[in-house]
Image (cartoon, rainbow, N blue to C red):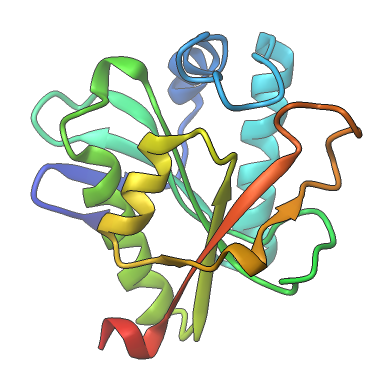
Length: 179
């Protein structure tokens, strides 16, 4: 568990699945994702997140507001499930409920996840990626000190040719940049 000023990053609980499914069914939240998820697909993603923690000792934390105890999404670290020129790598990612956007929660949680990655986990570099038009996520990447080199941009191999979300921008940050 990691605590920040306003948030708790923790392992997942069974009761997180209902609000997680609602988040994954949201048109706003899934605007730059391949599709909105059904409840079964959302539960499957939660299972994969739990399996990642069990198999690797780290993963995507459930994010809870300290003031209300509400589950608001996830933030954390994961190993991408595809091959790309920048692999092997550990990715930082986040997905928060739309009602909690614009309050700095994603940045706050991502900073804590980076500190965990470069501290206890001993990682030397962390990446993040999204579609070029996802300015909100790109803004978080820049606020936490990540940098973008257009030469690193790539076509996501899990998306079909012609899919408008296939092209991705890659951001990086190294441990020495955070020291």
